[in-house]
Length: 462
Image 1 (tube, one colour):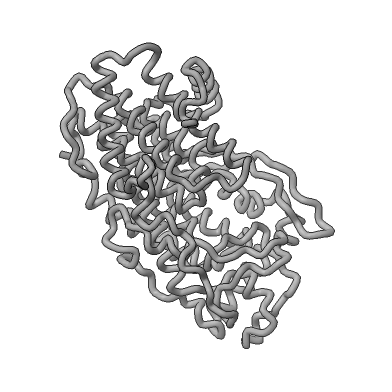
Image 2 (spheres, rainbow, N blue to C red; image 1 turned 90 degrees about the vertical axis):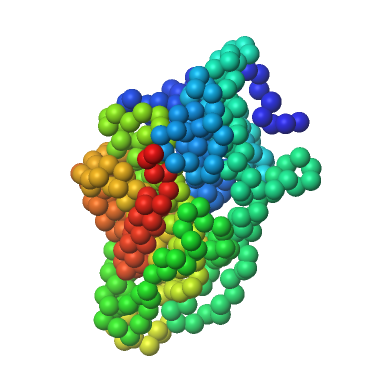
């Protein structure tokens, strides 16, 4: 049975109303930002996998929306050539159809759900997408304007999908851009000083196996190659250097779970928890920051297409860099018995405040994402002074005995500028105990560079 048809139109409409109530949409929201909130939110985005996979899906959906709108009224260059739609085509129907077509096709192309819980979550995502589509089109058969808009949206999405998928022979799609094998080849470097290794148990307590090595081979959206913005080797790679000693001892002291757990309501502890709890949702940050700037649907579509294209390409280039340098994480470094440097004292019981992600340290993936998104916003609005305030609900945070796990917490952070947010997010990873500082700052730089390239090359005004 096709899961996209498991709910009646009336049931989907009720779900759409509930979603509209639950989603924190900004003032002056329109169909573009409403759909962006659903696609990037907790119901849909996690179905695609990790941050790398989510960024790819959001880029495809956002570019589909952009191209659909510009087939109706050509204000910006499209990502791919599109046929002109009738002038009376409904923009909102086009936005709805582009999102629905792209998102459902990408969900349908995913491997079978690994658990029953994920199967349920995937069905809920499909239901939410269909409910929002039904609410946009309304009851009964579409009128001529809606039908033209639906055709424009479906055509734009199908064009984008055809670049990255092929027919699997059974009426479904299979990815052809390298995204279908994110963990191949498998990581196999032997243990050595400075070399990334599986996160040692008992961190949380399972061993974390290196992942996403294959993401370096995913076809980029706009940059020429995954190596185009290859970053230089880090100064911290020299284990005997003063730079390494300084960064080692900093993360060891402020990223220790015992230190952060003993100061649960301190700014560093809140900052560490804020970003992975929702602060890294840069689509949401962008909706908040741009809410009262008078953007129409075409302008919003361009903004989010540029942002998500930049983030997707930043994640591809980031994985290529990470698995070129293969530099170890703090948890491996600090527990290492003897790295040959007398100024870096080993601690075999040390544990980071947050769980270490499953890939090498340098450059940081989350700051690459932040740098790409923030730079896109800077370029789009021609200012760094783009303030925003965000509230997130941080999950329960495990701590090592004898400390008690930190409870869920609502955390609000405010930023007067994009650069303020960037710098805080970089330090958040050090407070978390999962990164050395240099890799975080280099990640910001790399993300900025990718965004500059994308902004200069894609979706230019006519």
